[in-house]
Image (tube, rainbow, N blue to C red; front, side, top):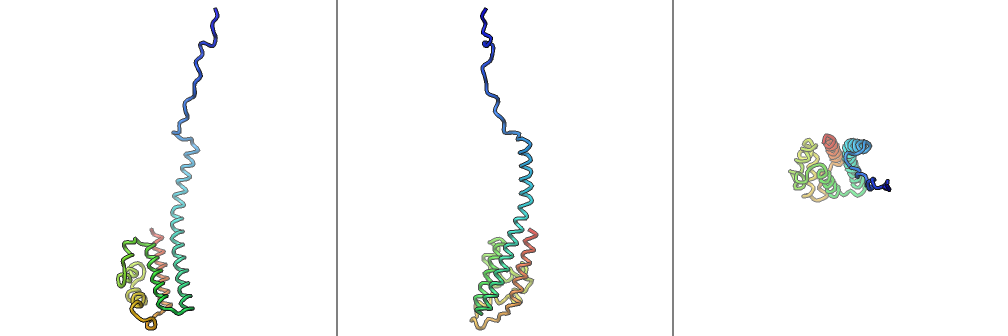
Amino acid sequence: MTTDPLADLRDWHLPEPVSWWPPAPGWWLVAVVLIALVLVVRPWWRRRSRASVQRAARRELARLGRELAVHGDRRRYLAELSHLLRRLALARYPRAQVAGLVGEDWLAFLDATGGAGAFSKGVGRVLVESAHRPADQIDLEVEPLAELVERWIAVGAAVDEKR
């Protein structure tokens, strides 16, 4: 009797493919670390970017003061100061709330968002009134106006921190 001892063996076969689910414990650890990292870094990054906007606004305000001291161009100083306030307001508040404001409405907005009445009833009125006067008739109190804008920037920074 000649029997083939290999005849009873089954043919070779591939193992089952490795499943991707559930992941190995190391991948769970990586996922938890990444989620924790995002939760920690995101608020820090937002505060940092807001703070950089505030620093840039303060640097711009100082630059405008230096240029006024050198050139003495009051109309240009007020126009650029108004542009600075507008850019910062657009960075802080929704575009629909800020973009269309002019004149008294603009001053009222600045008062409501940190000006405490000093824009519409105080030294800040010059931002609107200067557009209709000759440059030599602009009554500009540089220091109080710069301090008002600085306060508005600082109050906005505090509001940004709360968001």
